[in-house]
Image (tube, rainbow, N blue to C red; front, side, top):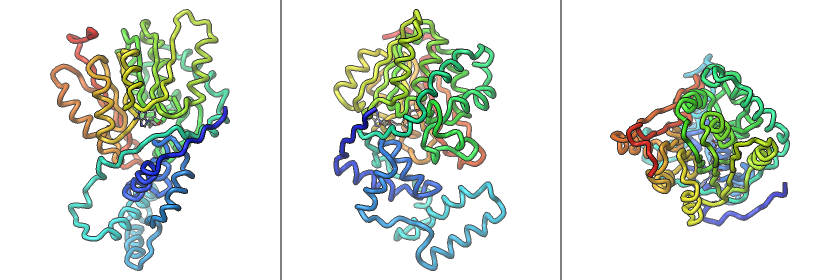
Length: 381
Ligand SMILES: C[S@@+](CC[C@H](N)C(=O)[O-])C[C@H]1O[C@@H](n2cnc3c(N)ncnc32)[C@H](O)[C@@H]1O
């Protein structure tokens, strides 16, 4: 597939650079912070590195001054002998150095979270070169999913430890804790934690019936889009339309999935629509109207304003709305909006959270949260 390269506007580049500078301390390494923002922008880490070099921004590394080096030494002593804490240690090191370079830091400000204004933008400059290598990996995985028994679809352990590892996680290895990082760069390229998706899938198996239309805002590689489409195909006989909304070029996985659906001669035609637009565009508004979705997954712009916009965009038509990154430390705006939504819909919706954490993580990894209209108000508007 030919690669399109469209330049980012200067303000998007500046925003990305500022984001890395201000958030690098929240990640195990600077590389991880760069990777994280690149993933959300839909460009390569090398592109963001080049912007940082051009902006000539000094970033905390190992510690330049004697005080910084001493602080790092003390922290290393603190966790000496505890290999499983290595990630936490690296994070503490970068964090400490960052603070030492910031004047007037108080203990209170140590607890501050990054501001919501650090909005990631996304782009049409997507590098799917790596994924070309994985082509041919999609169909066996779809067939594997279709061959699962109903009991296996409701077995959280089996899904978490056998099925999702076989499906494969996304390229962004730094997004994943040690326990599952080795699964990255494979298959469906799910940008999800297996210990969270597995119980969600079991929940969805029991609540999918009647879902006709699915909309995912922010699909990236398309892994979750394909997985949920397959799940709905199986558990909702009414399921007909899957709409992906993302300003990036369509992932080759989604293109292949669409071809696969067309080739199976399946009597139940499921239409896949890819809308290459920002959710803030007028076209996106039209696409939402057309889709009239019963289930929406919001995973696009992760700033508070971005998630709120997407929540308001879909309105109260969907019977279920799913959010991603509700406990992610690096996206506090999502968690804030999620709490507000829970409170505002407490009288009309039931809420569920899938936010189990891995031991090696810091307790702030991704997290799925969903609100579902209570049974008494299920009828569509
Ligand atoms: C974290 S990834 C999505 C991962 C995907 N949902 C999954 O679970 O595999 C975020 C995606 O959101 C897209 N995005 C960012 N801002 C957006 C917006 N305003 N509207 C739609 N998509 C957006 C980016 O292009 C990127 O592909």
